[in-house]
Amino acid sequence: MNPRVTTGRRFRPFARFAGDRSGVSAVEFALLLPVMVALYLGSVEVSTGISIQRKVTLTAEAVANLTAQATNLVTADVTNIMNASTAILAPYTTATATITVSCLVIDASGKTKVAWSANQGSAPRAVGSAVTIPAALAVPSTQIIFSEVSFPYTPIVGYTITGTLTLSDKMYMSPRITAPTYNNVACS
Image 1 (cartoon, helix red, strand yellow):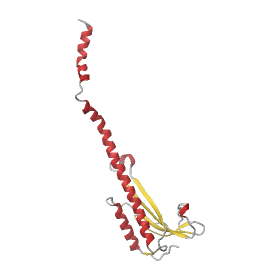
Image 2 (image 1 turned 30 degrees about the horizontal axis):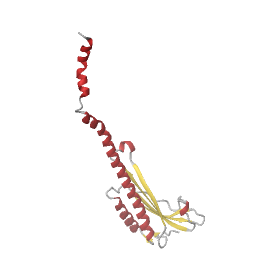
Image 3 (image 1 turned 90 degrees about the vertical axis):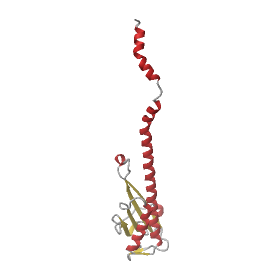
Image 4 (image 1 turned 90 degrees about the horizontal axis):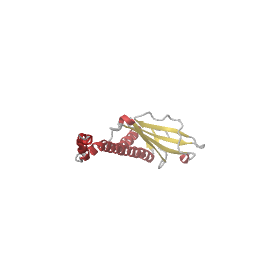
């Protein structure tokens, strides 16, 4: 018997298998499915993170803006401002968000110190402590409202990769009418 014929008979089932194209789509789909799912879940996590960061920025802006419009604040007023501002973070939980609003005094030499500070979810800034602000805002002998917001974001899918991310923002705003007092503490 011819050795070529014997070898050809042995490999004929493999040749037929190699020529069969009926399952190629299923195999390709099985190979691409994990990549497609990872891209989808990754885009959902990124868009959620961007959405929360935007809400944190809006919250910082609202706290500074509402405080800058006031002239005389008491604890209840500041609590209302912070509660109203945290509504911006909805539908995300605000229990772990921290918000601080402070009135900063810039002295004649350009040094900035805290005149008063109020908070939600964290300790307020110490009265008299120095604060570094952008040089363009450090106008001597003025006051400025400074709000800070931070929000711990825990990705649902990517938690094992990134852990909890702290999204934060700060906002500076000039008082509208006059620098507000807080519980009879002047911002001067």
